[in-house]
Length: 258
Image (tube, rainbow, N blue to C red; front, side, top):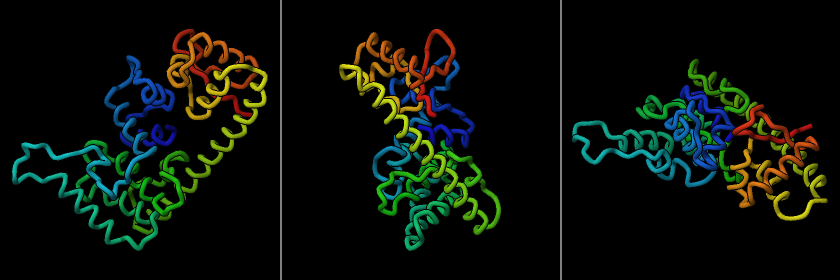
């Protein structure tokens, strides 16, 4: 969610992680939200979470197909995707991180830059970069800033920026995961005195989502609204979580780290 929200800026969508969390979990959007933008970034979340990688079937990965009534002389997406895949296959001996960088910078040259543009290219590259069998689904690229995704300079300069940007993103992700793990242990100790399944389930939801609302928690953990609100209030009183919207309606909470 955090990586996809950062990648959304590449297309000018600027979807925040809290709005994205509501969309992914409950398909909720506000009057100020662009449903098309949310759908695009929701696609990024799905592809960064699970499923076959782009080099298995790029069309399926991108959810893109040629229209059935395409004219014979028109350039087909299938052909453009095939050309990109052929180049990537020819570079199979390169390290996955290097191949990912190459694939990202060849995206527009292959004619794949329309529609989702840079975000599609970045999500595709992030999956390829993690295809070394380490067990990771994707390699973060944008959490530490999008400098590594800048398209300029000679290939060695682009690769150096790519490596620096990925390193920064990975460090940011690791700090977030470390903070989340520390918070979860602290919350587990604090809520051990409470009975029922709601405290533990709510704690899990708060570690898995950047922000949580009462209706969202209700849907995620299957508890009653009253039980969710009671436990959120209890956790807020003990500085485990804090409310971030500052309003009476549509309130959202996040973990209080440190």
